[in-house]
Length: 288
View 1 (cartoon, rainbow, N blue to C red):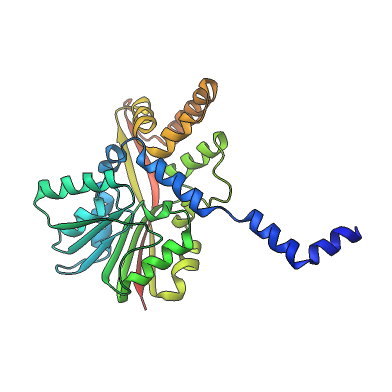
View 2: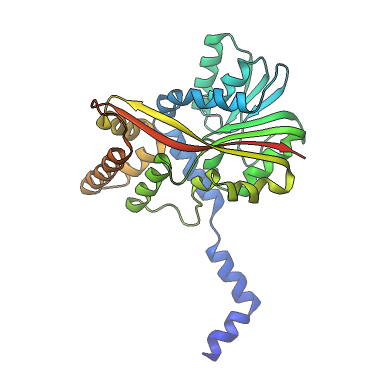
């Protein structure tokens, strides 16, 4: 007992324990980048376009505003801002997704700047943008606090920071929880669904905010059937693709059964198709 107590008070021992408990954020980021580079997120991402449009309206984007889309994926918020004649810079750390966003912008004749960038180390000057956006993107960063600080840093005083983040109790939040029961998350990883809670948003942004408006919203996934949804997410959505890939045949079967049961619990369709509501938090922050 004496030895344990003395070690507990030893600063060197305490520091070593803290280092052992601290997550390896570089390794976690590399793992997450590999996850989002797998499959083809755009197959799922294009179905979420309405969320980018709703966020652009909630932020009251105006023509000529300098707008940054962080962790833009295939460009849903990017296109929404560009359609409102904003000067848009679209960023992501997956080049393949930026290329898809560029194709979409070109097809619509929209002038957008696309740039490879890490949400935790944005290559822009302080106060460079009138508005900073992210739809289901920045929430997947490895270092939550640093990513939030970067969004704050590049937004000008009086500017807007807008996000759409899946909520823990919603369908996607529960799907992450279901996956976590079969495939343990990396050591030290924080749940991305924390970004879908008002308390965590207040912690990360409150000190720099004049106003924080956070409203629960619902996005409806619409697929041909539960089997269709599962097939698409297994083949194209990085987190589920990687989860199934980490399991043996029996584990894959068990995970598929649990996801199918989750779908059944949420599905509102009665005609054999899939209409699943998923709660997300729409956040608009006015920077001090």
